[in-house]
Length: 213
Image (cartoon, rainbow, N blue to C red; front, side):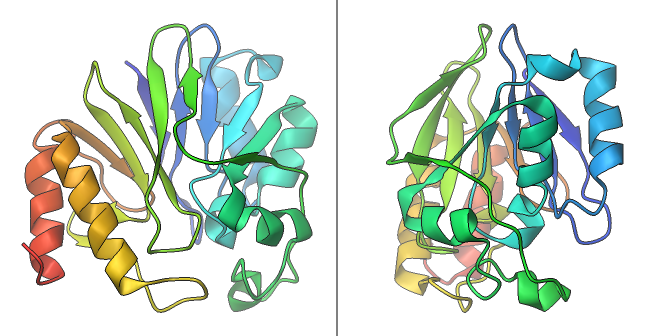
């Protein structure tokens, strides 16, 4: 199995582990369940095995746990350059930490542009720039197995909001169309259910929801 998932607890996003000899953690939740996340990881891999954390975007429910996880795992954190400053500074407004009643916490990040490839040894996941939910939203795409992790760009049964800081409806529509053109089979979104078949049809439904199909 190329993707292992931990369903979001309380306000947390879903958290994913891309498995292989050199695994990659995708998103971190708020950090409110840090020990639960670490326990979950320990069932799958050795603690120091996870050296890279990829954030799909700046929002606190996806990046709030990054600082503690990066410290404990001794891992490098990656985020798109358009969202990097907000995450690096822990900006409570731009990361929406203030919506969760916290001040936010910054973490050092390595900036991505899109086009980078994260290899786990078993699978190669390409970073696809998919702005709209935020200015720096990204998706991860495994072409050989047709696996897509779209963050909050698209869900099983809907799409991410575009009315929050740096969101943009036109960009979101363009990004959803881009993801549709990939024709994914497996879909692992930032919240809610995932699907292991029919990913393209799920994205088409999201485009219909946007009134753009």
